[in-house]
Length: 90
Image 1 (cartoon, rainbow, N blue to C red):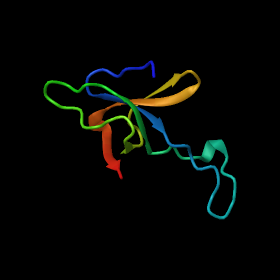
Image 2: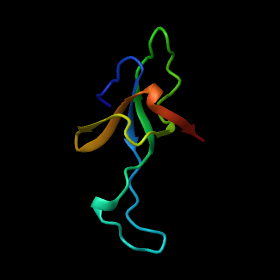
Image 3: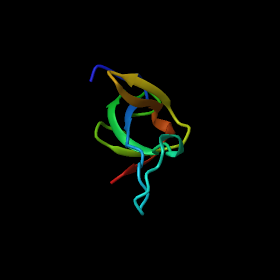
Image 4: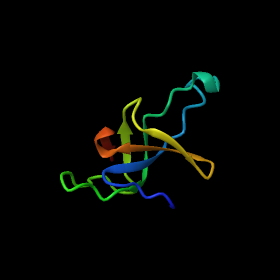
């Protein structure tokens, strides 16, 4: 990974959006909801006031409007502060 977040920021690879309903109907791109979970692929060192709790490989939940979308080498990521992450799964 060539992106290194600074301070208390993390880079998250969002989980893929659901493309089908449970009954098998295909959901068009315009109606798909943004995923609210993903995997941490890079993390900063934290700040002097707040240590970095998240680590690479953590599966996390985040708010609907959290983070900044970044596209790098054709892959879409989210960059956000550690405080924007709501929970760690698992």
